[in-house]
Length: 233
Image (tube, rainbow, N blue to C red):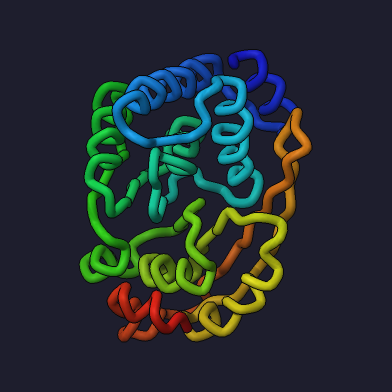
């Protein structure tokens, strides 16, 4: 795994220290151990984890400057993309947010065991968390599987004016992106860039949808999740 990561980061023109690669390996080991008793990931081969999780998440560093930024990972699941971001960019201040308590307990254990400062794991729904953390973050990220018109309503209310939300999506998301343009505009933002990238040493191509927040989100958003899912913007 170490050599694969080194080669991959080099191909991405990212400078990564040996200590950071060791941390990524540590997190992988913790995840795989916990995965024996909890469903965290279907990918269990270290080489595949390096490619499909770690190098994939590192692609975000090519789309935005995360240094000294307040960052939130919406629906973080097993910690992707947030944990690799925090390890590769230790000056960012990261909040990992998920509605499943067991996942957050696992991530909290990793944060404590790996002694990651400026990092917290929060058990909450995004639309409820926004009530007390509205427009608090420079960057929101998500690799969640929800449709983009749902994701933006959960994420953009948490982003500061001038900040951004980056959604990790499939390259087959053209129709989904088009469908979300109305919601993005209503929430005070616009699509700034769509970046397709290939994970190093693979033929896997994914997409980053970079959304810039231009003005404050109207106060009625986000709505309760049942309304968001029943009637997306």
